[in-house]
Image (cartoon, rainbow, N blue to C red; front, side, top):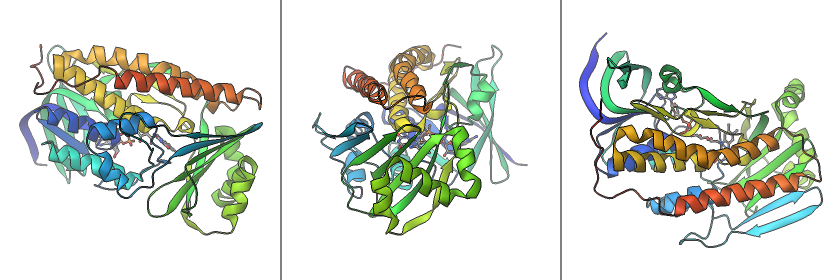
Length: 392
Ligand SMILES: Cc1cc2nc3c(=O)[nH]c(=O)nc-3n(C[C@H](O)[C@H](O)[C@H](O)COP(=O)(O)OP(=O)(O)OC[C@H]3O[C@@H](n4cnc5c(N)ncnc54)[C@H](O)[C@@H]3O)c2cc1C
């Protein structure tokens, strides 16, 4: 099997979606030599209900990518919470030049990010799997091994970044320990409806179930229904379609009635559940961004927002101080993650009552606001600085 080797990069990144492509773009914009690899094909879909929160939209704006998203994605100008004791609509306030949220399909968002990484100078290769890590004499990670179309790949790097999602090969090969585990997981079924009259995000909560409607591209709304992991296994006994209808009717009867008359587009998609975790995010020569290092329950609709945040704080740390600054990245990531991670676990447990779900949602809102404040503070990548040489 032929081997391509001998190349050396400042950073090699496994995974070219929201975490990896954003990190590659930011590093390449600072002049770093970046290789971005993904085993899937360019522009493909992945599980997601698409909702971007304020932090993600601000990042896209700051990176100069929001106009490209907004061109084909409906603006979300309010978030409506349907709670057991009433309905509350919160308008999206204007902040730093951003006055709306967006929920782009992943085929749109991830392609824009990969294009931006390539335009910034990163070398982007799809159809290429990272299969292992190379290590130096001290045990420091010094590169990756991989595979592309039958050929073996070996490349060196000052920093290997795992942005390869929930089953991260980089995390496993690096030996990243899991520091925190969530108490429970939700399970989600979602599908698309041709429905362009839904105004803003809608989040529905009844005891034991939740649902939501999220306007996205092409006149579609992404509608999800969620219960506990164990409950979904039972609901699926008579198929995904029946389970979706039943859970939606329970969590959001008005929405279920309204959609009942309109055709769904495509089959239901199922997330069977996965307990959240916070893994070590870095070690000598390696770092993890996005779901590779930190997965919180999808009910918070916050994974993409945090993937962008990770990209920004990792790129800032290593651009300013070199690849050995990954420890500082980990500290900052943990500090910004734990509050939201804990409340996500409480919501995903479905152990809340009609009386206390509002408190959990307020806690979630405060945790998000804290994160936005941190990200809009003095966090800036120093322009013109390249990655510093590795120390060992
Ligand atoms: C049902 C569901 C709904 C969700 N809804 C929302 C939402 O509304 N809003 C939100 O913000 N978040 C949501 N999330 C979370 C969000 O989807 C994730 O947090 C986000 O996709 C993480 O991005 P990532 O780039 O870290 O990983 P991923 O999107 O998982 O991408 C990882 C990439 O790595 C590649 N890869 C994997 N292994 C290798 C390898 N060995 N070599 C090379 N490439 C590799 C994969 O092909 C993939 O392209 C949802 C999640 C689920 C499950």
